[in-house]
Length: 117
Image 1 (cartoon, rainbow, N blue to C red):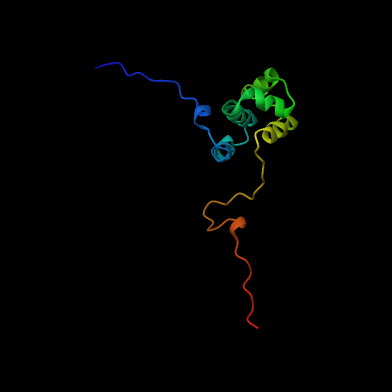
Image 2: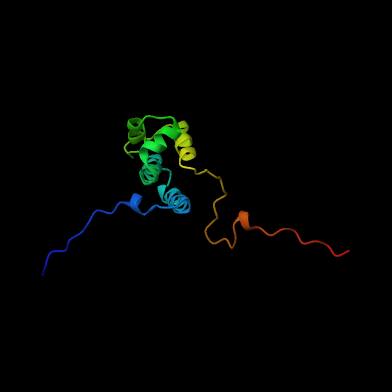
């Protein structure tokens, strides 16, 4: 049997549009389970896809400090996260999590029916 050749997967090479970047970050929020370093690493992936030097300039940080903050080895301050998210052209949103087994989330609740006149 021959040897199988593999290559290293780099998600940053596959994040091409703002929509893909937002979807990736949203998926990471769901998987993180409160792990801030996981989210920092995900933001680092997106920053590398967009260009770390440009993101650092837009966030008002040095490139080196941005690499350290988003390495996934430590948890950056929330102010850094907000600056990076803004520099990436993304926004954070809060939502009520859907309970397991519920038929609809609060964000999809129907408007009250209008009475006939």
